[in-house]
Image 1 (cartoon, rainbow, N blue to C red):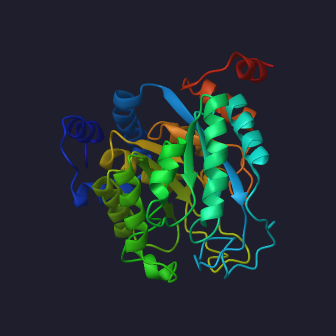
Image 2: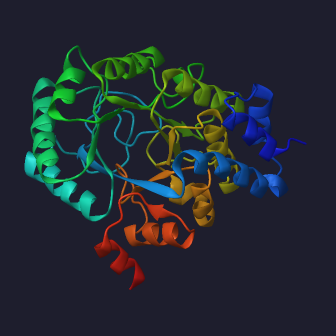
Length: 334
């Protein structure tokens, strides 16, 4: 039996865990789970204390995507009844930034469906970002798909702090999820972002019929890419998508996955992302022991829980929002 605290000590001393130890985390007996969470928390606390970073998404362009990603309700393969619309105007994006600031979100995530942004769409985003930066103390994360030459530099010049482009799954499992772009296409965009000086954000979706070895590979790939922020999504299988009816996850396994990502990427922002409410259920609060970041509000085409419930959860667990606002505190207490 692995001593989880000793393993945490080795990680804090700069050592990397082995594949065998990584698999032991995913296979942790349920009666050892609290000990594993406590060890993960020691690593998390070392780098982030008891702070929780909040992020808010705005879906600035919905549906109308030519890609065939099997998990996505916005893809060309999906028959899910979602709202579809072209790129939002500047005022709508600014309105979302105002809401993000009011909710104590440190990062505002501007997301658009599609393979990648047209020059016109990029201009709409950069124009909005410049104005947001003048009005609100927010970090801006853009998630616009595959980038063409010079687009990363234009985003950087406008004030975009971070760019999200998830690897989603392992290289070996990628073709089981999508075939309209390659795993290497995704990696190339992350490298473009890094080269431009924008902070790279890249994560995964767990629960898409991958093997546990794939999950370990994902965590190691993100370490190799040196992603600063790692969103860990848990598949919320949407009716009308190719992965409809896929329900492989349990709340306890999701917690073990979060612990794995903390052990392999000890100093990075680990964010519990899409599918949190559906897959972690009543165990959501325990996810804050390995993870130091969550989304508030809704996701792209699915609803999150009430934002006041998120703030209350953070407070009752003894954590604190990184950018605390007296107005939000008042709402939580009443």
